Image 1 (tube, one colour):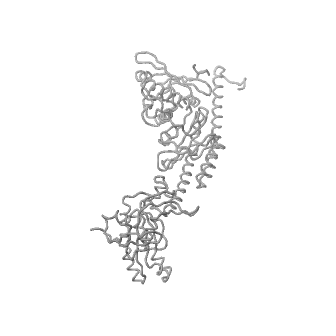
Image 2 (tube, rainbow over the protein chains, first blue to last red):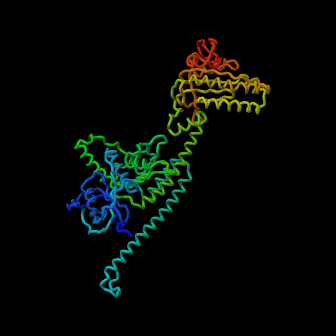
Image 3 (cartoon, each protein chain N blue to C red):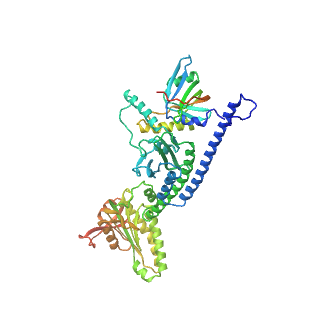
Length: 137
Length: 434
């Protein structure tokens, strides 16, 4: 039995942006907004790696991170403690994410320009459902 | 929950009760899912038996999309089929859309449907609006930074203008892409994993049925075209790789007429079985030579045949090809004639060749279309054939000039030919140049 329940899946469709909090090797925290946290399996999630930014750099120095997602149907929010595991540039998860990005990119005239670099896979350590709340302004 | 449930440990009670209630909820949900699933499986079986019982493509598509809406509740659905020659999709049927969008085309890699076709993998997306907004903002940033030139908005894609959710599945037959099945919704997150499972089964069934119907259509068209064209060409036309030659067009062609001298007398005196056997032998040999030289057999009438070159597919040196084929035919028919002569039949080959513009296309009426050419050129070739003495190959001046470095000719004529106002110079082909 994995950590992530089925009821969290709607929160991982990218309807509302999610947030991820990381920390650099020397202890400087960073919070950033991400468009979608992908459900991999009951113990793993994936974040798209399109640009090399603070999040991608931090987790390579310090793998622990906190992810916050919203279920758009119930407005329940979830805190996920995660740990960066690996970065994939092929395979089923990468393909699913890459296809979506390519399809949308082709619709806004960014085909071949905006691409998925990698799927960063995180292991889920814990998932906590918070009381229903409105999304952040 | 009963309030006075007797339990030994009062302190552990709330947690336990909550756990039991939760378990019951889970069981109820699973039961509902299961009931829904088995109902859907039954429905799918019904759809499957309906669509596999017809070979009519339109009917297959209507059945599938109607069932998606009425039985499975998908309001907006469409089927796009892959073009047989190029990497593009065309909307063949839709349901729920106004206008229907049927006929709209899109290239592989374009939008959700195009990417699904290109990768031959299903895509389920529930946040189209948010994703587009996100990438549009990135685009705006890149434009502002001067990394890309502004504009370049993509062409509108078939489907809902403001779709939020889409589930698109490749229609595959043994890993070969037949088309794409798509359902859409203006609501976000409208489709889930169960929809994926159900539609995958429908898509598999539909792919096979569509492919069978399409193959049947093609075989029908192919057999019609194979009456006139070589099998390779007929296939090319059916798959869209060549223009449909049955559409009327004008083309510079070389026309060859041939017939057997003495055939009418032979047919009058010989037994019909004997006539048929001679014709079969003659047709088989001539047919082989026509294919070998890439000629187009327009028609046979008893012992007569009309062949042309440079249509429907352009060929290099049509006049030379025609002359070369005529020489090969003469060579092949000579021993046949000797054999027929031994059996008492005086038969000999005569050939006429001319070159010029003709109007070519389908001639006839619904249910009985023929591929034919009309023009002075066909008339001239027929008349030259009529004038040819046994074993002669008579060619027009243009053919003679085009084939002059290939064959030795001798002038005959000018000939006064029926249907032609002026006497026409003509040449007899003696043989290949040494």
